[in-house]
Image (cartoon, helix red, strand yellow):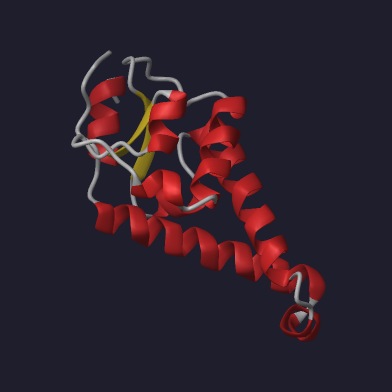
Length: 133
């Protein structure tokens, strides 16, 4: 297993805020602002959109909307430059949604969600160095 330098928690939290805001906006646009404000299940729909959006984009482009916007990427720690697979990305995002796994982490900055699927969150610069781009 190759050691990669993970990004700071501040950048990860910023990416999470961007993802959550985008997911909330998507739900508001779909159901309307009034229904969003009145429906107690709105938070569930935002969470579902967040998990699906971030898993699909991570598998396709190496990061969620928020991670791409904040110049982060999710990489395989084995050195393979391809994005993680869809199943791994989905498992990773479900674990992120459970909140506790990202808060339990190793000294290298990888949380349980990353350890479970063999991934790490790195800066765009680190990713470019790994891929030779």
